[in-house]
Length: 172
Image 1 (tube, rainbow, N blue to C red):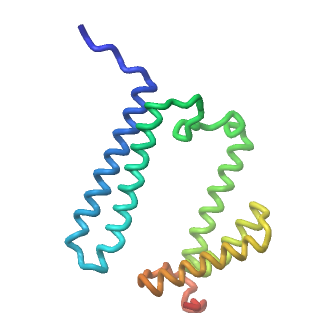
Image 2 (image 1 turned 30 degrees about the vertical axis):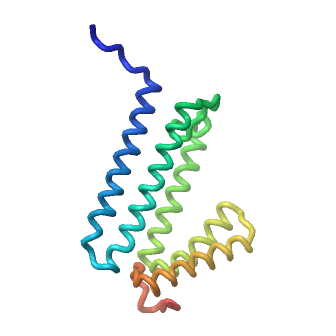
Image 3 (image 1 turned 30 degrees about the horizontal axis):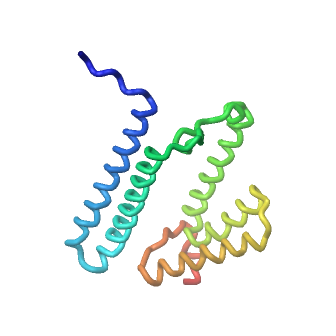
Protein backbone atom coordinates (compact mmCIF):
# COMPACT_ATOMS: atom_id res chain seq x y z
CA UNK A 1 0.00 0.00 0.00
CA UNK A 2 1.56 3.34 -1.01
CA UNK A 3 2.20 6.02 1.58
CA UNK A 4 -0.40 8.75 1.89
CA UNK A 5 0.73 12.14 0.63
CA UNK A 6 2.02 14.57 3.23
CA UNK A 7 -0.31 17.53 3.86
CA UNK A 8 0.97 20.87 2.57
CA UNK A 9 1.44 22.45 6.01
CA UNK A 10 3.51 19.51 7.27
CA UNK A 11 5.58 19.59 4.10
CA UNK A 12 6.23 23.32 4.58
CA UNK A 13 7.30 22.75 8.19
CA UNK A 14 9.64 19.96 7.16
CA UNK A 15 11.13 22.04 4.36
CA UNK A 16 11.73 24.94 6.76
CA UNK A 17 13.40 22.61 9.22
CA UNK A 18 15.52 21.07 6.48
CA UNK A 19 16.58 24.53 5.31
CA UNK A 20 17.59 25.58 8.84
CA UNK A 21 19.57 22.34 9.27
CA UNK A 22 21.30 22.97 5.93
CA UNK A 23 22.23 26.53 6.97
CA UNK A 24 23.46 25.17 10.33
CA UNK A 25 25.70 22.66 8.55
CA UNK A 26 27.07 25.36 6.26
CA UNK A 27 27.73 27.69 9.20
CA UNK A 28 29.59 24.97 11.07
CA UNK A 29 31.59 24.25 7.91
CA UNK A 30 32.56 27.93 7.70
CA UNK A 31 33.74 27.88 11.32
CA UNK A 32 35.68 24.65 10.77
CA UNK A 33 37.27 25.67 7.46
CA UNK A 34 38.32 29.09 8.78
CA UNK A 35 40.46 27.35 11.38
CA UNK A 36 43.28 27.06 8.83
CA UNK A 37 43.37 30.80 8.17
CA UNK A 38 45.74 33.19 9.86
CA UNK A 39 44.40 34.64 13.08
CA UNK A 40 43.35 37.98 11.61
CA UNK A 41 41.77 36.35 8.57
CA UNK A 42 39.73 33.80 10.50
CA UNK A 43 38.25 36.26 12.97
CA UNK A 44 35.25 37.33 10.88
CA UNK A 45 34.33 33.93 9.36
CA UNK A 46 34.48 32.20 12.72
CA UNK A 47 32.36 34.79 14.48
CA UNK A 48 29.86 35.03 11.61
CA UNK A 49 29.64 31.24 11.38
CA UNK A 50 29.27 30.83 15.14
CA UNK A 51 26.54 33.46 15.35
CA UNK A 52 24.74 31.90 12.38
CA UNK A 53 24.97 28.47 13.99
CA UNK A 54 23.61 29.84 17.27
CA UNK A 55 20.68 31.46 15.44
CA UNK A 56 19.98 28.18 13.63
CA UNK A 57 19.94 26.29 16.93
CA UNK A 58 17.53 28.86 18.37
CA UNK A 59 15.30 28.55 15.30
CA UNK A 60 15.29 24.75 15.56
CA UNK A 61 14.38 25.04 19.24
CA UNK A 62 11.57 27.46 18.35
CA UNK A 63 10.24 25.06 15.71
CA UNK A 64 10.36 22.15 18.16
CA UNK A 65 8.55 24.24 20.78
CA UNK A 66 5.83 25.25 18.29
CA UNK A 67 5.27 21.64 17.26
CA UNK A 68 4.72 20.59 20.85
CA UNK A 69 2.78 23.71 21.86
CA UNK A 70 0.88 24.95 18.80
CA UNK A 71 -0.40 28.48 18.95
CA UNK A 72 -3.65 29.71 17.44
CA UNK A 73 -1.70 32.36 15.52
CA UNK A 74 -2.34 31.95 11.81
CA UNK A 75 0.02 34.62 10.43
CA UNK A 76 3.53 33.47 9.64
CA UNK A 77 6.07 35.95 8.30
CA UNK A 78 7.44 33.33 5.94
CA UNK A 79 4.05 33.08 4.24
CA UNK A 80 3.28 36.78 3.76
CA UNK A 81 2.53 37.59 0.15
CA UNK A 82 1.52 40.76 -1.64
CA UNK A 83 -1.76 42.18 -0.48
CA UNK A 84 -4.41 43.26 -2.93
CA UNK A 85 -3.47 46.87 -2.26
CA UNK A 86 0.10 46.22 -3.40
CA UNK A 87 -1.08 44.59 -6.62
CA UNK A 88 -2.59 47.86 -7.86
CA UNK A 89 -0.90 50.56 -9.91
CA UNK A 90 -0.26 52.61 -6.75
CA UNK A 91 1.47 49.63 -5.17
CA UNK A 92 3.63 49.24 -8.26
CA UNK A 93 4.53 52.94 -8.09
CA UNK A 94 5.53 52.62 -4.43
CA UNK A 95 7.67 49.58 -5.21
CA UNK A 96 9.31 51.31 -8.15
CA UNK A 97 9.95 54.33 -5.94
CA UNK A 98 11.88 52.21 -3.45
CA UNK A 99 13.76 50.57 -6.31
CA UNK A 100 14.71 53.98 -7.73
CA UNK A 101 15.93 55.15 -4.31
CA UNK A 102 18.20 52.07 -4.18
CA UNK A 103 19.47 52.74 -7.70
CA UNK A 104 20.11 56.35 -6.72
CA UNK A 105 22.19 55.23 -3.74
CA UNK A 106 24.23 52.96 -5.99
CA UNK A 107 24.76 55.86 -8.40
CA UNK A 108 25.84 58.14 -5.56
CA UNK A 109 28.32 55.52 -4.35
CA UNK A 110 29.77 55.23 -7.86
CA UNK A 111 30.01 59.00 -8.19
CA UNK A 112 30.91 60.24 -4.69
CA UNK A 113 32.16 57.16 -2.83
CA UNK A 114 30.61 55.31 0.10
CA UNK A 115 31.21 57.91 2.81
CA UNK A 116 29.89 60.94 0.95
CA UNK A 117 27.07 58.97 -0.70
CA UNK A 118 25.87 57.85 2.72
CA UNK A 119 26.15 61.42 4.05
CA UNK A 120 23.90 62.62 1.21
CA UNK A 121 21.56 59.65 0.79
CA UNK A 122 20.60 58.81 4.37
CA UNK A 123 19.29 62.29 5.28
CA UNK A 124 17.55 62.56 1.92
CA UNK A 125 15.84 59.18 2.30
CA UNK A 126 14.87 59.56 5.93
CA UNK A 127 13.75 63.17 5.76
CA UNK A 128 12.27 63.44 2.27
CA UNK A 129 10.81 59.96 1.82
CA UNK A 130 9.91 58.93 5.38
CA UNK A 131 9.54 62.43 6.88
CA UNK A 132 11.59 61.61 9.96
CA UNK A 133 12.60 64.16 12.56
CA UNK A 134 15.97 65.81 11.90
CA UNK A 135 17.33 64.72 15.29
CA UNK A 136 16.72 61.08 14.41
CA UNK A 137 18.24 61.59 10.96
CA UNK A 138 21.37 63.21 12.38
CA UNK A 139 21.68 60.46 15.01
CA UNK A 140 21.45 57.69 12.42
CA UNK A 141 23.93 59.51 10.19
CA UNK A 142 26.35 59.92 13.11
CA UNK A 143 26.04 56.22 13.91
CA UNK A 144 26.72 55.23 10.30
CA UNK A 145 29.68 57.62 10.13
CA UNK A 146 31.10 56.12 13.32
CA UNK A 147 30.59 52.62 11.94
CA UNK A 148 32.39 53.44 8.68
CA UNK A 149 35.21 55.13 10.60
CA UNK A 150 35.59 52.09 12.88
CA UNK A 151 35.57 49.68 9.93
CA UNK A 152 38.32 51.59 8.16
CA UNK A 153 40.40 52.08 11.31
CA UNK A 154 40.04 48.76 13.12
CA UNK A 155 39.50 46.26 10.31
CA UNK A 156 41.19 48.15 7.46
CA UNK A 157 38.06 47.84 5.32
CA UNK A 158 38.43 49.78 2.09
CA UNK A 159 35.19 51.57 1.37
CA UNK A 160 34.33 52.17 -2.29
CA UNK A 161 35.78 55.38 -3.72
CA UNK A 162 33.74 57.25 -6.28
CA UNK A 163 34.75 58.87 -9.54
CA UNK A 164 34.95 62.23 -7.81
CA UNK A 165 37.08 60.88 -4.94
CA UNK A 166 40.21 62.88 -5.90
CA UNK A 167 38.23 66.11 -5.34
CA UNK A 168 36.28 64.95 -2.28
CA UNK A 169 38.66 64.02 0.54
CA UNK A 170 37.28 61.61 3.12
CA UNK A 171 37.71 62.80 6.72
CA UNK A 172 39.03 59.40 7.84
